[in-house]
Length: 168
Image 1 (cartoon, rainbow, N blue to C red):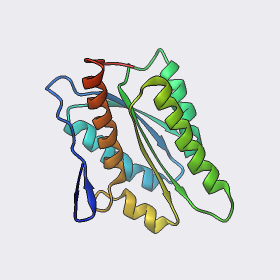
Image 2: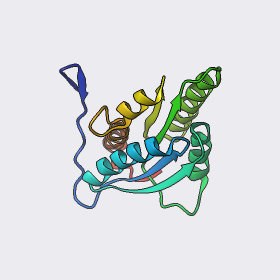
Image 3: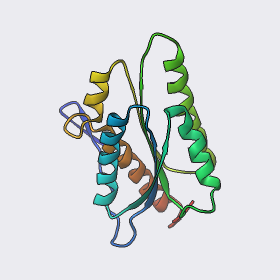
Image 4: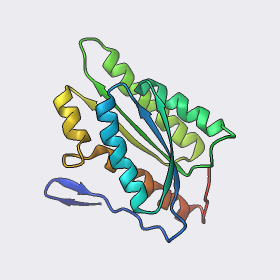
């Protein structure tokens, strides 16, 4: 990764035609307008490299790790090479914010390591709705796109390091 004007310039891997990865998109719908924006950005990045995806919606960010765990055990889903977790947590007046942020990230990290699964964490953790909109906007920080690119980069790394592993 190279830095340009204070922002990261993530290199998006190029997959040969017909080898685009199949990715699980998990979205928390608690803030539907934010979820729609970050989901559109993630889908754009996946399609740009010829990838495909399956999409699962859950009520909130705390449910994302459980949904991923269920998906990993599922016999009905096509095998996926990575996961992009998307959602938004906005600080309130109680400690619930810290619990949701910490536990959703810890759950995702635990599953990623246990299953050698590339995960792009696109769960926004913000102070207010204005920050959420800025981070979600494709013309802003584009965190949905960043999470998808992180996942794609890790899939590429996994394929190179594990001699062509194609499924989880």
